[in-house]
Structures are given as structure tokens and as C-alpha cells.
Image 1 (cartoon, each protein chain N blue to C red):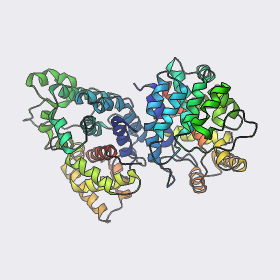
Image 2 (cartoon, chains in turn yellow, orange; image 1 turned 90 degrees about the vertical axis):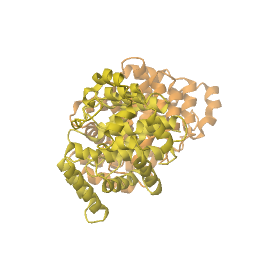
Image 3 (cartoon, chains in turn orange, purple; image 1 turned 30 degrees about the horizontal axis):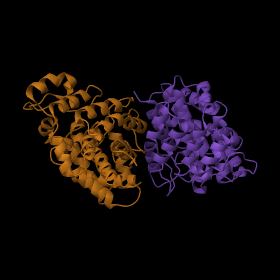
Image 4 (cartoon, helix red, strand yellow; image 1 turned 180 degrees about the vertical axis):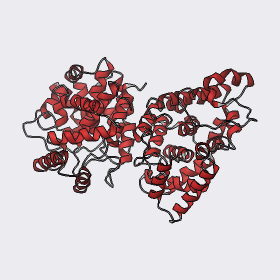
Length: 277
Length: 277
């Protein structure tokens, strides 16, 4: 019987094993400097941090530890977003049934020290982020652990940080609304049949056609993100080959990472609810 | 910094991610009832047992626990042999530098209770084994934990069990001779360049061309195992496409599992010695 932390690690591994997921690294697609094996090492390295969350420990400490471990490979940021989504879910599972309500309660209960842990995680790895809007009321995440004093002075919790980013970041939006797309992803995966990695790839495409991927907005721009959504719709409608789209997006360096993170979160929820492999 | 147990788990994952490995499950080849994702779950499930060995605990208990965890998926025997090879190596790494001498010392120092653990592991999963030769001096492994009384009465250690099988089983041969092919595999992987999974796949083919795979002997017969060796030589010489061989062996249900196990062991040694991904 796998532990909650092992299910979290397995979810990261199954997400990257799921193919095709247009634009993202998967078992049949990779970039020369961001490889499948680095995602595998990232997931294994994240295990100790995930175990802190799975044992009911502080979310911020769990997250920072997981990201430090994830970074012990040369690909850089492999699963920062996926870990950010899975950590509060693992913490919710530690205390009882994993539901939108318990997950929301974990997110809302995060503390200033959890925010410090979150910022400190940026010390371990380069994460693509936009310049914050000028009206942003929390420190720029790129300050990393140097932001600790400011966070403590203002009494900013990790939930506060997520609220500030919810409009522009798909993961922060999940954090502040009971993780609706993540739970919906779990339901969709549970409702399909066949290998879990095939189900996850199919659901990835549905999610991609449903909402603009905020990581593509950050890495490219809104126009590119809208094109990705439109092309995913075309692939769902059979007007475009999914494999062709996967090749093209990899060639263009377009990786819809937020959507992949939500798939990882959904796989984790499904595993916790008894999904068998 | 990954722990010894995490390197062991990562070695199992990298082995199955390495492609093409003619006849074996890898990230581009699988069987309908034995899938890539089941190997991934098997590796994650084995982690707790591997941690016992990596912390210097008893090899037999570590092995049984790892196999029980590995079996928490529906593909059956995914990595029994790889875990059997990696467990004593992880135990050797727990005490200091991992060398043929320290690994040999761990194997030779195994106890009757380690043998009981080894036999008990067969309770958790069906493993393809031949009928033992009539002159066999140790119990049939298929008796599982029922063999415990006989092992204790005869004072049979796990090393004794391996000595009995060394002539017909490639892993037992490693166990009783200081793991020469496994260490040689590590050297070969370290000596190559590029992604680790590409290196491991290339070394797999070399190993396959070098010695008859004893798992193919068990599953099929000596003639098939010799053909596999010959075909691997042809592929190495460029007279046969490796990808074609991979398709053909999967179609014929030929999986050179012992050779894959030795690759997993070699990757583990290389990771412990600092191989970076």
C-alpha cells in the first residue's frame, strides 16, 4: 500500500510518462536541455519534501524541501508547478479524506512561515515568471528567501500570496478556489478506461482546449496561449493530429506547463481515491 | 542530494525508461498486460524496502518489503530481479564505499533469516522459475515462506541459496562472484556520453550480445536464448536494426530480463558514484 507521499511522487512520474501532451516533455518528447530522465530524477528527488506534507507537516517547509530535492538534476525547473499543486493536496490527504473542502481548508490555513518556505524554494531553481504588476502587494517571488523579512513584517501568508496571483496564474487560481479543475481532472481520469497514462494524456488535451495555459502566457504571450487553446480544440475535433501538434509545439518551444501541473494534481487525487494501475 | 535508497529507486526507473532494449518493457515498448506505468509504480512501491537496505538493515527483510511494495500494481512481476541485484548493493553502499569487495562481503554475510526473507518475497508475486534440478540442495523457491522451517533447520543462508543457483541464474552468478558484470556495466555507462537512458540502452545491447540471458532460458529455452545473443551481436555489428529487433522480440514475447536487471544494477552503482543527470 503506497503512502500519500508515494502517490504524490507517482503522480509526478505518471504525468511525465503520459504521451502525447503537446508541447510538454513526455516519454516520447523531450528537449535537448530538458529531458524525460530529468523529470524522473526530479520526481524521486521531491519525495522527502512530499513526505513532510503527506505526514501533515507545514506546507511551506514541505514545498521548499521538495523543490530542493527536485532540483538535484541538470534540467532546472522540471516540476515546480506540479509540486506546488500536489503539496497542499497531500497535506489535506494527511488529515482525512481528500476533498475540495479539506484542500481549500489547507490552503486557507497556510501561515506566514509557509509563505517564507514558498519564497525560499525560488532559491533552488530558476522559474519562469513575469515581472509583477506594479500594484502587486506581495514581494516579487524572484527575491527568494530575501523576501522573508518583508513577508513577516506584513504578515503575508502563502494563501495571501496566491490570492494576489490568482488572476494571472492558473495554479494560484486553483489554490484559492478549492482546486476545482484539479478535482475535475481526477473525475475525468477515473471515468475513462485503459492505461492511466493514456487517460491522462487525453484529459490533458481536453484541459488545454478549455482554458488558456498561463505558463504559455508567461513564456510567450496571450496570443500564443490563445492559439494553443484553439489548436487543442481542433485536435479534439479531429481537425488536427495530436501527434503533429506535439511535434510542432516542441519545435516552437511552447510548453503548456500549467495544464500539465493540473494533470499531475488530478492523477494524485485519483490515486489517493484508489485508482489502480 | 539523493539518498542511497532514492538512487536505487531512480535506477529502477531509469532502466525501464531506457529505450530501445529489445524485448523488454521500456518507455516506447510495452505488453498489454505488462505496461510501462506498472514498472513506474513498481519502482515507487519498492522504495520503503530499498530504504531498509540503504540504511544498513537486513538484506532479506529489505528485499521482501521491496517486493511487497513493488507488487502493488496489476502487472505482476515488474522488477523482482532488479531489486534482488540492487538490494545487496544498496546495503554495501550503506556502510561505506560501494566496491566489488564490499558488495561481495554483504552477499557472503547474509544469514538464514535473509534466506527466509528472500523466500517470503515469492509470496507476494508470481515469478517465472524453472523446476529445480533434482539434486538441488535448497527448497524450491515457489514454496515461499512455507520454506522457512526447512531453511532454519538446514541453516541455509541467502548466500547458500545463491550458490546453488549460480550456474543457471545470471543474478545468482553476480551475487556469488562480487557482481562483476554489474560493476562493468557501471563503468561502461560512466564511459559514455549523452542522456543516461541512451547510454543504458546501448550498454544493454552490448551485454545481450555478450552472454546468454538466463531469464530467456527460463521463459523459453536455451536455443531461444542463444538466438537472442546472436541477434544482439548482429545489431551491434549494424547487420540488424535495433528498433526492428525490439519490435520482433516484443511480438514474440521474448524479454531478456536478467540483462535488464544488470543494467539497473549498473545504473545504481553509477549514480552512487556521482553520475549526474
